[in-house]
Amino acid sequence: MSFSLPVPVRFDEADARGILFYGRLQELAHRVFEDFVVAELVSTWDDWFLAPDFIVPIKHAEATFHRPMRPGRSYRAELDVVRLGESSFDVRVRFVDDAAPAPVACAETRVSHVFADAQRFRKIPIPSAIRASLERHLASE
Amino acid sequence: MSFSLPVPVRFDEADARGILFYGRLQELAHRVFEDFVVAELVSTWDDWFLAPDFIVPIKHAEATFHRPMRPGRSYRAELDVVRLGESSFDVRVRFVDDAAPAPVACAETRVSHVFADAQRFRKIPIPSAIRASLERHLASE
Amino acid sequence: MSFSLPVPVRFDEADARGILFYGRLQELAHRVFEDFVVAELVSTWDDWFLAPDFIVPIKHAEATFHRPMRPGRSYRAELDVVRLGESSFDVRVRFVDDAAPAPVACAETRVSHVFADAQRFRKIPIPSAIRASLERHLASE
Amino acid sequence: MSFSLPVPVRFDEADARGILFYGRLQELAHRVFEDFVVAELVSTWDDWFLAPDFIVPIKHAEATFHRPMRPGRSYRAELDVVRLGESSFDVRVRFVDDAAPAPVACAETRVSHVFADAQRFRKIPIPSAIRASLERHLASE
Figure (tube, rainbow over the protein chains, first blue to last red):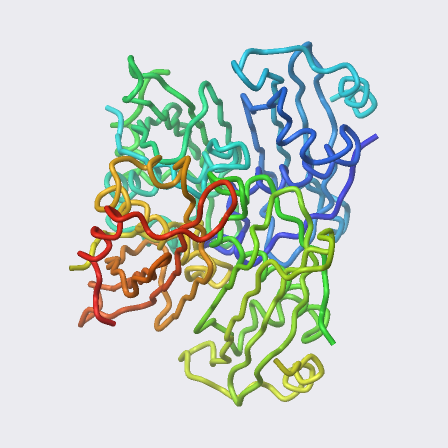
């Protein structure tokens, strides 16, 4: 089941052409990811983003744009886990315009996160409690 | 031949872990792209970014991270055109750490730009003068 | 009566020291202002931010910091109109930490907005319907 | 003598009205400040921004806007120290448009920095070597 959230595009997130700057989409996607982490994966924000034992850097990030997204509009973000490996997992966030005549996906991101130990930055297996939670949000692509 | 430029990572471009926020890499890459456009493709910034006849939206953007990039450091950005189609082209920017024992690419972006007419947002061929300039920077991947 | 809203500080809004970058506070304040405009002053976002007749540029912006604000925390933003002139008005946003032993204002912004005609950028009086709404949120400082 | 630097405004730093977003001006000013710190005050970026002994948080930040600043243009930033106290100092950055018929200041920032010890966040005197360097850039307002 997707983790879903409304995401407004703000005045300052437009570019000189008046539409969402493409580079900003990952910021919007990461805000959704932060809320997902706290709601579904760990108890507190610090348990993930400032954890003393592990870090979860990003090794690859993609964004695909189908329609321009505009400031002053709100989009429905739908987050799914689309791959779950030994040390890494991929998250997809779709940004859907529900105000269009028929709901349409304007853009989507796909981001690969890798678990590593915080001291030496070496790959480690995903902790088992977190893996179990990720599985619950695993979607077939 | 690559278009090359030093790119500093700034204090505010770090995230809560103290390294460059992954979503910021496209902003850094786009700054290099803006300088490339003005140096190599058109006469003035407005001729591209506020052109009355065409717009060049982005349809796909990728970033791959090999090593953490840190605030207070400067990286050598190397921009190449890596695909040139009828209406669209792909730009790659590599961020190289020249301060490492051996120069190493810490991250790279690849972005697809599509020419469209400014009124109806329909795909149009790349204007021929711009195509000729893009060809001069076309690298084999 | 204050217009009030929770405002989370995000992972990427920290700086290299791990606290909210001071320059980001105005972005947070402006998000609150956008929501205030739509909830209290005009019918739709476009009626203010893309209005064909008037623009409302900012002539002065201040921020005062009392305590560090941290990513992963949410603050209660309280927006008040603190000055109402012929053509301009000042908005204050306080960011309150309700999770502290006693609620404490960590930071506040104060921003001066000026009405101008969209063609010639000359000062114009605040439209009367908007003035009436601003008055309802006018606080003594 | 002012510390001076060209500062371009980028495509993504515009807002939905096509001019520099007011909240971004502090980011531009801070980039100039970072370069000033490394050129004039300490040996390396880390000696200031990641110093183990002290931190230099900002307690107040102002920005005044005279004319709209536009993406695709470059401005001459002029940085001066405009107040030097026991523990704190104020920095002003003016953004001058040299392409105007007569050079004109489009905007300026003024930011108060306070030295504090890194452990307990208590005010400390400005270290004497840094104070001497700040004095060389002290301008009468």
